[in-house]
Image (cartoon, rainbow, N blue to C red):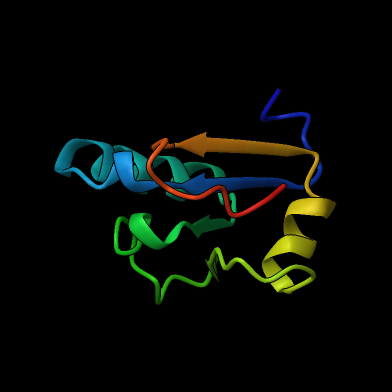
Length: 89
């Protein structure tokens, strides 16, 4: 699935904000080169200075991140937490 995706995207949520998941995500991004975004509570899991980091999910419609999600053919959601308001509909 990941290998056949033309425009994959990694969405990082609050549940990934732990040492082990963060290290595993870093290795995953390094290996795959998949761009990533984070929710507000997933901020800081991966270095936001990384060139593959697209930004933090906002609640405003039609922003850059919403367009990236719309264009994506595969979204890998890691660390989703029900307490976070869904950034995308």
